[in-house]
Picture 1 (cartoon, rainbow, N blue to C red):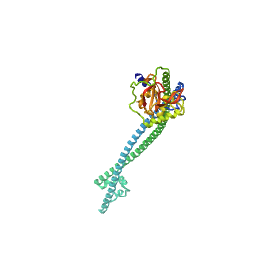
Picture 2: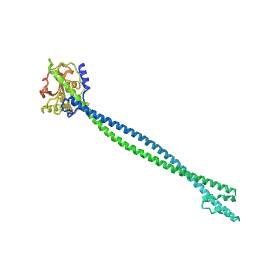
Picture 3: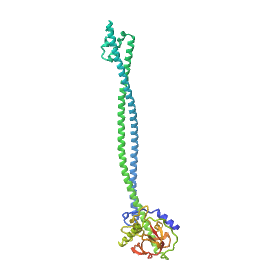
Picture 4: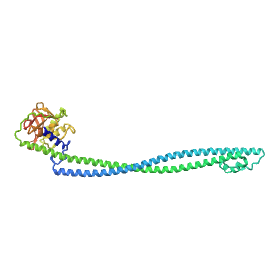
Length: 400
């Protein structure tokens, strides 16, 4: 049992998922083929590393441009806020100027009444004539020096109107100037923001392009790695099974059926009866087509014993993670054990040269009525045979 566990662990580290027949030129890849696959993988990795560096640089530039764009946006928002304040101030100043101008107009009307009263009372109008002939509030204010003849009360009133007009006009001019300057600043910041945003957008496009390129390269790298790994593992499986079978061929004292030592497999199965019958159908078809036996091969043109089992159940619909390309010994631990008296078509049969799991060297598919479909050997090929025709039958079958 310890040997079985050690063998299972050691092999499991190098086992693959499903493999494709076109990966290797021969079912048992050569070291030269594996070296070539390694070189291709290394080249793909270098291209992927270069693409990653470019992508990282582009992303860094993008982050810098994004920061500039954000800063420009902040300045733009600040300028907009200042513009709003300046606009409110200008509006208030204009309203105040309008109000004072209206007051001056009203004062002009009062002065007119004063002049009329003076005339009626027999007074002279010569002193206030400049005021009466004024062309508006401003002209009136400019001639207020004549107010001394109108009395101190009226003089003070018109002086106040003059001051209000001057202040209002100055406030409005300052607000208008601020509004113009602020608008210029806003336009400048908005232009800077647009430049930054445009640069960021272009950089984002470039990053997206680089990402597409990197994704494609990484996909090619993964494919190259899978090819290399598959070649190595395919060779390992072929060499192991070949070694087991060669050892079995020179081992004396093998029994037709080994005694039950209580080995346990899975506690559950993964297939339906329909799937098991479909696997039998596939195996039968390969045998009748007289396909050759080749170490490490799992079809479609040639098979070894575990390759035929793997291909049959893959055809029946099993795939990773429920199904894997193992060797005969590992399939014994990868299936549910059933008594030889309870075999059903599609169950797997195992042959060992010492009656232990670790010395299993052959695997077949039960066809029913004591018969099986198998990839027997290089010499015999794929055949339909009796389950006792090979020495070393384990005392259980494996239901997938």
